[in-house]
Amino acid sequence: MRTIIGVDIGTSVTKAVAFDEGGGALASASRRSHLEMLPGGRVEQDLDDVVSGVGEVVREVAAKLGRLPDSVALTGQGDGLWLRDSGGRPVRPAISWMDARASDLVTRWLTDGTIGTAYAHTGSGMFPGCHGPLLNWLQEHEPHSLDRAAVAGYCVDAVAQRLTGQVCLDASDATLPFLDPRTRRYAPEALAACGVAERAGLLPAPAAPGTVLALHGHGARLLGLPEGLPVVAGPYDLPACAIGSGVREVGDGVLILGTTLASQVLTDRVDLDPLAEPAGMWLCTPAPDRWLRAMPAMVGTAALEWVLALVGATTADVDALLVDSPPGARGVRAFPFLSEAGERAPFVEPSAQGRLDGLSLATGRADAVRAVCEAIGYAARHCLDAAGLSGTLALCGGGTRSLTWARLIADVLGRPVRIPLEEQVGALGVVSVARASLSPGYEAPPGRHQVVDPREDVRALYEDGYERYRAELATARTAWGAAARPAGHPGRL
Image 1 (cartoon, rainbow, N blue to C red):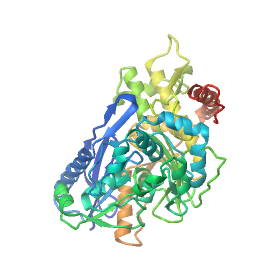
Image 2 (image 1 turned 120 degrees about the vertical axis):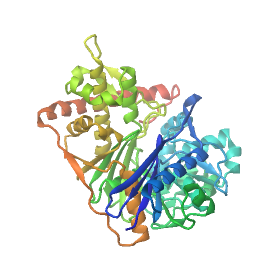
Image 3 (image 1 turned 30 degrees about the vertical axis):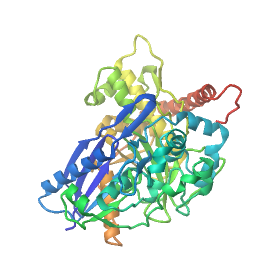
Image 4 (image 1 turned 180 degrees about the vertical axis):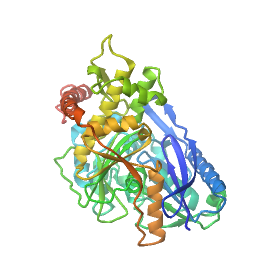
């Protein structure tokens, strides 16, 4: 029986899970990741620390198995900027996708048409923590780092290079913001629009689907596994979660209720509409004729954790707090846009801000928590509407540990949600990709899940709530944009 260890290198936690051929989890391990939260909204990570964490969790899982795995499959966080030299060593700390140093630049690009120009050739919007603005920012403020670099990549390919000695970039990671998803080649027009055409040589060409690497000597010692063991790198965590949660048919989608709120819908066409809102992206999948229309919002469990800390509660209290406040949160309403980098889907606004409205002396802490959870649900519905959901919907991520919150999400969306019983769907998804790469023709077995249905008695309340959310958001976006634009600049929202 072929056993594969899937490694999901998340923003806050690195997890490893060994799966058998039926998709059953055999052993797992996890390690908290370290983020450097610096002034000015800067967020960075140490590649050496990340690689060390991968080694620790893989060694622990292999020890629990009591035998060697047949291969290792890597997935993890996307976006950000992981600069390395030709040997895979970092030339500076990795810049996280959460980083906000380029927020002013993105605001300017939104108003002067730069992002719209790039979007017309790639179908990818931009936000402060992606390659376009980060490369431009470094070129202006830190050109020596780019001069020293040989590769401007991402988390998964950075770790893979340290384990195998080879640069292998999955097309899903390469998508944002320069890749034409139809050709899987970089669009020179997008590079030029961002003012970084001269740095195009730092971008690795996407690897062919089905590429298999092998552990070299250093990687083998790091993981405690034999040299030459097969390694598959990618897709990154968003498409890996879609695959692992059973998104198979065109129109089906997945909502990841994690640090970010990532909505994805499987499609068989790419529509690069230059008049569309320049947000989200078309993610390449291992199948050349299938893409994921993705709307990965910055809101998510981070907003929930913020309001829990505000009211002196923890995640262990979520279910009880949601029960203590009725649907509609006694009139309390929220915007969950708390990231210092603003919002990136289904609209891009670096100046987006969170808020709580409708408070009074009668408001309890449970009302504040429910209001934020409902707002996250409205944001998810907005993203899924923009992504074109028409089929079934899977719900996964850390937020699904609260069945009460999952039921609230189904209520707000007004549709059933399928919750996979395997929690680590990202690791499961990349393991499925690895099996297909090692054994062409492999088809993943149907996963086990539970279905949560929406309640009819709250449908009208949440339909009205969603309409109000969208109307208030439209008003807020006008105000955010006006505040961020220079005086006298007409802008474009």
